[in-house]
Length: 246
Length: 222
Image (tube, rainbow over all chains, first blue to last red; front, side, top):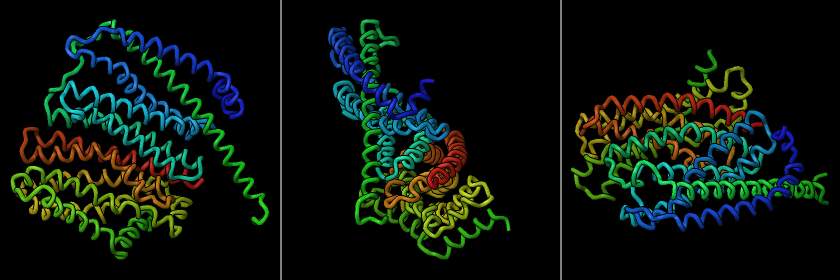
């Protein structure tokens, strides 16, 4: 079984070593195609050229939520199955997820300025993504505060799962709060359906973003495994050093 | 004596005798309320309008203030190890601790609210509404905080980390607490709708917070 085979970090490292060049190449090809199609996509009749921000904004938003889901699965792997790579996968995903959430927020703000006349409005979606970003940052803080990697992994796994339970509740509350304070006045994408000339580049860009995430994630997992090995070696060296307690 | 009852009485006694805890929490709450008019000006109409929100924010911050001692004190003197190795299910033990903590720190905030509401120019009906929503909502803050306290129990700078981890999770409680208070004061929503959801949030966080905190403590000691 693949998941069990991967439990051996050395085997995982050889696999990553072999797969990474291909993934980098595929990401570059997908981004070239996606960006070319996005650049040639027609402008929106209401929003003009600013609609092109969507090709970066929407895939980043999808990934921001998808990465938390992935981390929740990894958290189950840590707590339930004790898979040795699960907490490595969870740890490597956090900064990448935070970065995609930040990209989503920044592009959203740049899009909001010409459309809404302000960089930030307390729209329900923006607000819940902002809270998601804060939770990513809290998770990073937890990872960095606990010294021992496996203990940090279990604590982060519990927080990730609680976050996964709470995120829909937060989303629901923010929706409620927003409709209470300001009735729907926000300009959304024109029309209920997106025209295929925009939809197809969007899907290709989403695919490119997903490939980028997989590439970055695997590379970060490799770095994390190597970093832990260095840490263990340094601990062993410190124990063996002359002058330390025998 | 039932071990849970013993734990409950012990925590209440400690909270009462060690000093600090509840009194400082209420004092902090008062100071937040007093600082607000200095920041936004002594306009009574404006204060009455944002009063419920300020009271809720003050109570939220004050309840965070005492959380870092909820489990850390037990970890330092070794009684946490006794609780962990004892026969009583850990979930029940941490729930008991959280309940005692709420009685000694959360409830005083609720009792002080009608008094502090006078400073915010709220009438009696409004201040009762805020106190009622705080009564229903502050247990949720304690149970969410319980998880943060369990996660950060052995850390040197646990208090700061706890705040950062817990605050985003309290957003729904804050939203429904304030909107239930406002519904009772100005409408147009019926008070019942947000208030029932607030009670539901308290029950959910009781379950999630208790089990997650127990899991965090168990995994923390391995």
